[in-house]
Amino acid sequence: MSALDPFKQWVHQRCGLHLEGLAEARLTRAIDALQVELGTQNSDVLLAHLRQDNDLFDRFVSQLTVNETYFFREPETIQWLVDTYLPRRLAEQGGPLRLLSAGCSSGEEPYSVAMALQERYGDRAQALFGIIGGDVDHQVLTKAQAGLYAGMAFRALHPSLKARFFTPVGRSFQLSASLRQWVAFRSLNLLAPDERAIGGPFDVILFRNVSIYFDEATRRTIQRKLKRLLTPNGILLCGVTETLGNDLGVLSLKEEQGVFYFQADTPASEEDSGAPTIPLTNHISVVNEPDAPTALPAQEPPRQTPPSSSAPTAAQAELQHAHDALNQNRFSEADALLAPLLADDPWNVDALLLAGLVARWQQQPQRAFDYFKRALYVAPECWPAHFYQAELLRQGELPDHPTQRQRGYAAVVRLLEASPLASGGLTVIAPPLPPGDACFLAKRYLSEHTATQGVG
View 1 (tube, rainbow, N blue to C red):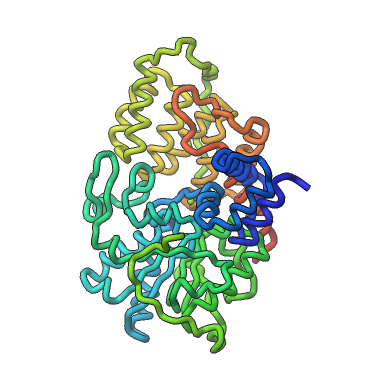
View 2: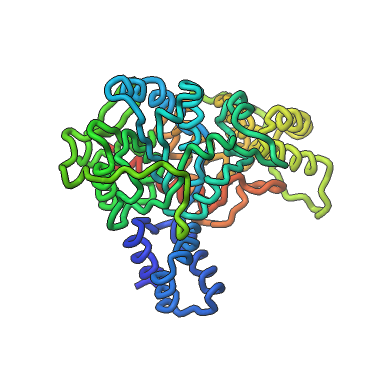
């Protein structure tokens, strides 16, 4: 038995997380930190503390998931929900309607729904809809309630919404008090004995980009619990790439206007539907994310090598400035900084990767794809370029080519399994995604693809 197995089993039993493969690296880091905190390497003692101390377990679990999210992720689903489903639901039964973001992480998803509803219904929105965000990670719930965001959280948010709902605070942005008071955040463990402590019943449950952390048996158990939290004819929405993997026979898969959702064929039993309605006060329990590519250039690029001096050059300083501008969503500024760098050195891997990211968040996916392609021509080991090329296809930003997409993720896994801390050929900036997280996500997306072969 591996020394990790008792911890895997306890975490799986307690909250369902499936900690295999690349997730083991995060588990190992979490155990190392726990050993330092408690001053012992005895696994039995560590596990005893985790079983007895809820706050300690919460901090432990917060290190085991990839909280990679942003505002208006998969916006077509949010638009359909706000423009089509919820108006119809209001017409059928009136309000208020109740929505749950299950696995809400740091709050970007429920706040996105709140912004969209506020845009459509104005001041009436908060009387017509109640919104709860729930997560097992109490640290991200604290961040969600604070409503302070920066960097790539805004990558898909329209500038007009950012200007309307956020106020600059230093290098970050504070969400309006009105939205923070509207959306309630609560601890949610979907494997707890009584999942209905979260409240409900709910007309809509969003369970998007969460199920990658659970094996099939756990997903089925969670769906049964979520079904009990739904009102009659209520719906469950999963992430676009998770839909087929969640078609487990518990709920019926349906489609409308290109959006897939799950719905119970029959209302839940009297026993299952008796969840009390809990007021939507905002509190946290005290315990607790192609077109054919252009032809390669004929001229062979030079291989990039690390700088010989530790003192940054002017070009390196400009790269860092462009990187900072990108992280602050100042895309035009980053673009302007990168243009002369690429004119002077068209094969600079760091600049090409940054230019690809800038183009992506400026909604120029083909331009982004081409930048990533050039980076890979210079440095085939550039796993971030492989990853983000594949993401452009998986997220539907370019027409999907499944074989090409899978090759990209497979390259990420191959490169990072061979060298888990690889820089990807970058010599100035750090990889935009931690290597362990990138490899974990790439493996998940590869396994999802394998699981859905032959479906349909």
